[in-house]
Image 1: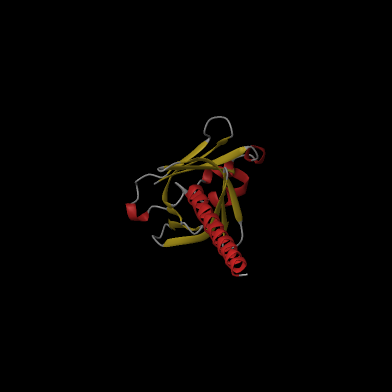
Image 2 (image 1 turned 90 degrees about the horizontal axis):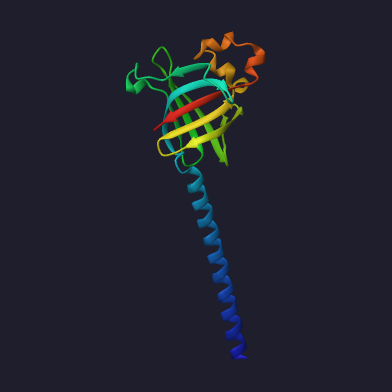
Length: 171
């Protein structure tokens, strides 16, 4: 009887330690996967340029972010490890405007969900330690970009359907 109790206790101990180890392994694997997904995305990104062009073909409109303004007034995109972020932009009056959002990353898609529940899905074309390149259909962001790129007003409606906006960021 004592042997049976010792054997049962040993099995219970063995199974409980395995299940705990499995949970630790699953948690560790999830953390490693999250870190892999976030690799090169976390941090502060400075917009370098915005290009409007067809999927294949030359750039039709380009807006460069240059060092004309002092460094402390440059726009910054911040992606945090907890999948929150901010876009910090300075208005013409020199006032800082911060737009908070949550973000996600699925394979080649980088999505941003604003506080008002609007969602912007972009195609993640390049992510590296120093460069981030995403593409969005023009029609999904044209209203937000008109004040930055007035030339968008001159594009024909039919042409807007086939154009994409390429956002290029650098660290």
